[in-house]
Length: 81
Image (cartoon, rainbow, N blue to C red; front, side, top):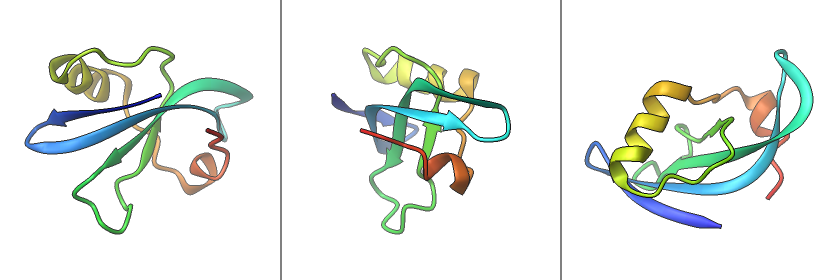
């Protein structure tokens, strides 16, 4: 499932996935892949280890602030959609 929310003036796409938090927990977990749609090179892509899709822009912003976004390339390499 994909949803796009406007967060801090940017369209941010959230996609359900699974991933491994490399170096933290080697078990595959439910997560959300996060992509800033204005970032043409994907430098801001990341994973939020949270299993529920936000319902609105305010909730999306809180999720990004509270849960943190894992942008480590090793973690990103484990993402499965």
